[in-house]
Length: 295
Image (tube, rainbow, N blue to C red):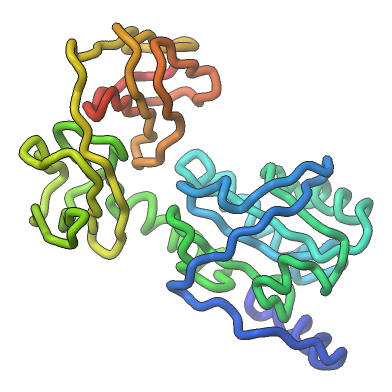
C-alpha cells in the first residue's frame, strides 16, 4: 500500500516543479543530521547508532503518510525491544497539526523532528526527498539497507536481521568473540591481514595481540578491540538483578541484549540497571561474557 500511495505525492511534485539531487542508494552511508523535537530540543540521527532505524519522512497533511502510519506502528511495537527504532522527520510548516497527528496516529516513539520549513526542510534536501511518504531503513552501522519498504518488506527485513542474521559481541574482547548464531566469519587485523576465519558461534582470540580488528560476519562488517584483563579477574553479583549489579572491583563493562545489541557501557564498580526491561542479558566484564536476568 505504501508504494502504491506514493503516486499521489509524485503527481503533486511534478505539477509544482519540485526537483532534487540524486537520491541515496542501498549501500550508501546515511548522512547524519540534527533536528529539533516536539519540545524544541535537538535530536541526532547518529544517537541511534547501534540500532536498526527506519528514517521516515512524512507530514500531517499527507494522507498516504497517515495511512502508512497505521501500518508502521504495530511493526515498531513488535521489534522495538530487539533493537529497532524509528526516526520521523515531518515536512509540516506548523507545529499544532504535526503534534496532533503524532498523537492521533499513536506514533509513540521518541524521535520526532521538524524544522517547519515544508519542502524547504534542510533534512529533506539532505536526503533528496521528492515525494511523501519516503523512508530509509538504516542498519546498526549507519548504512542504508532498504528504500521505501512497505509494512510487509519492512517486517521481512527485520525478521532476517533480528532472528536470522548473526551479530557479534562484545566490542571490547579479551578471550572470545561470540556470535548470536553460527556464522561464517573472517577476522582481519589493522594491517588488512586475515588472522582467523571459519564457521562457528564463537572464536577464541586469546592468541591475538591487543589492538583493533575487523570482523566480517556473513555480509556484515564490524570492529572490536582485543584488550588485556587486569588482575585479579573481576566477578559480579547478583545473577538475578533488581536495580543494579556490583563488580568485585572497578572494571570496563558492557551490557548486551540476546540479539547482540549493546545497551550500556562504562567503567564502574556498580552498574545501574533500572533502565533495562525485564529479561535476560549478556554482561561483558573486561571482555569476558557472563549472563544475568533483570527482574
